[in-house]
Each structure stands twice: as structure tokens, then as C-alpha cells.
Image 1 (cartoon, helix red, strand yellow):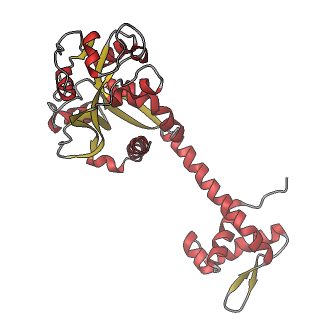
Image 2 (tube, rainbow, N blue to C red; image 1 turned 30 degrees about the vertical axis):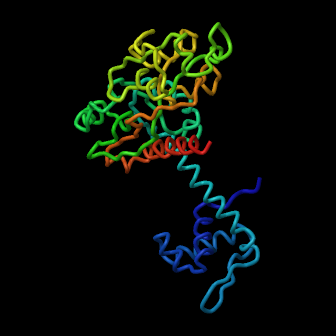
Image 3 (tube, rainbow, N blue to C red; image 1 turned 180 degrees about the vertical axis):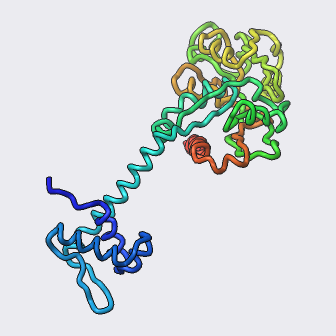
Amino acid sequence: MAQLPPLNSLRVFESAARHLSFSKAADELFVTKAAVSHQIKALEDHLGFSLFERKSRAIELTEAAKVALPKLREGFSNLSESVQLMRRYTEHASVNVCMAPSFAAKWLVPRLHSFSGAHPEIDMQITGDDTLIGSRNTSANMDDWFRNDKIDVIIRFGSGNYPGYRVDKLFDVTAVPLCSPNLLTEGEHPLKEPGDLRHHTLLHDDTGYSGRPSWASWLALAGVEGIDAKRGLHFNHVLLVLAGAIDEQGVGLSMEPLAQSDINAGRLCIPFDLKMPLENSYYIIRPEQESNNEAVESFVSWILQEVSNDAAK
């Protein structure tokens, strides 16, 4: 391999060639015009040919310089990107995201490989907290999470009214019946229409939060009568409802986004078309000052794009 000339002389040449001026190159590089001339002369001596044609009041690139300049600029650009990558790895940027365990397990975690692949320089900390559901927790409550627990971003199901914070809506939410696909075709009473629920066990999510979907509300919306909406199996967590539905213990009622990964995998299905809109929605929230945190903004941009991609399907 041919011996490369000093990097500094190449940098001076690139600047002078871009400006077609030794004076402007000197100003850009914070050196004297004489220093630029010296570096260019040293580079020409190293290469064995001229790079500039000196005119009375201007300079022009020689043909050799014109041919080499684009690749030289590309090289400096690659060097700059390489340095930025090294800095990112050494800085160990991180984002601490807090949300309900159900949202983390069923919506976020199955997608995180996409974010990690796009941003290997950012470490993720996922914190699950069941109190991040519903409208009973106000901005005052979130102050403690952000300040004391060093949380960067909160994702929550609620009203969206959180004064003093940057709030982006992720999506509205509907509640749907959920069951194993086997219940649609097998057994003495396969699920064909909402009235067939009278022959199946109802699975209830009894998590205590405002806006929780109930079988009574869904059955009323479907116009189904004669079914005791309170009967069946009651659980204190939506993850248990989904697990029971997957294991064919009955038919659960839950938020559609929390079941999407199981639906995509064929473990669950929505037996009826009727979807019940819920009053609350999912939001992503962070303090105003986090707008200067590049890692946080990268995560927020990514998750908003994920939501947009889902909506486009």
C-alpha cells in the first residue's frame, strides 16, 4: 500500500479546494494563509504533482485534484461518522421507560428488537408499574416517578390531561372478546355469534382502574340478554385473563392492543366484529426538558413511528 500523506495536509487541501481560496481555508481552519500554503506545498511535494494552478488573482484545481476531491470528501465524511459512532458507544446513552407490565409484555417488548437494531448505542431500562393505569394518578404523582425514580419516559393508559409535561397520544383503545381459535370450531357450542357466550366461561379482568372494560358493558352494546355478566373466572391482572383465554379456559374481554402479539401468533382470535371504544387512551409522556435528550427523543420518535406503521396496515 502506498504511503499516505499527513492527514492534516489533506484536510487543508480539501478546505482550500472547496473554497478555491487559501485565505478562506485559513479562516476556516484558524491558521494563517502562510500555513495553508506551506501544507499545500508539502502535499504537492509528497505526491509529486501540482494540485492548484496559481493565477494572478485566483487559484484553480488541476485535473488530478478534480478527480481526487470527491473521494477525499467522502473519506472525511466517513471519518466523521466513525468518530460519532465511537463516541456513542463510549457515552452509553440510556433511556428508562416506565409503563404497566401488561403493556410492556404484550405491546412493547415484542417490538424492542427493532429499536435496539436501529440504536445499538442506547441502553434500555424497562420498568413495570401497575399504577400507571387509569386516571387516578395526576401530574403530581408523576413528578415522583420522573424525579425520584429517574424515569425518562412514561407510557400510560389514561385521560391524557397531564399539565406540565410533553404528551403525545399513541392510540385510542377498544375492548374486544378474545379466545383460542379452537373455540370457534370445536366443542358442543362453537362460538358463532355473541349469544353463544352463554355456553362459555367468561374471563374477567378485575384490575381496579378507571375505564376498565366490563362484560356487562360489552354484552349491552352487543344487544345480548339473558347472560349473567358477572359469572365466570375473575383475575386481578389482564395478563392472567389473556393466559386463561390462550389455554381455552373461556372467553376474555380485554384491550385489543394488549392481545395483538398473541393474535398475530395465532394463540388468540377475536370471535366477533363488535369492538367497544374505551374512554381512555395510551399516551407517551416526558418532562419538557427531555426535549434536549437525544436518546429519549430517538425512543419517542421510534415508538410514534411504530404506531403509525400499525395504523397503516
